[in-house]
Image (cartoon, rainbow, N blue to C red):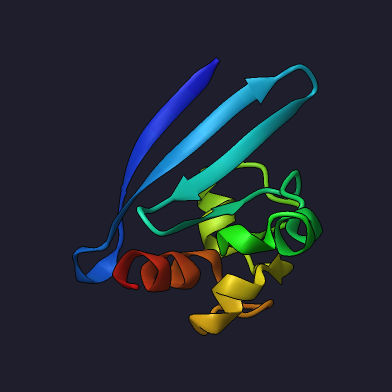
Length: 103
């Protein structure tokens, strides 16, 4: 099953939350037009190494089980393109989403 949830953050920033329920796991994503944050299933190393030419703006949070936890939790790792925008590991997910949405 998949759920799409509109997300309204402060300052008029909006995003879309996507929850994909799979056997024994749930994939969580919050996306904007420019980038996204995701649960621990995201492979930041792959994005930085094998897909570097795409300049993907993304961040990974581990140990999250809901869209709310993804937005409120700290990012464990981020892509090089995200760092170029000022998004850093340890930053709260919703703060990273705000930067992505306004980049």
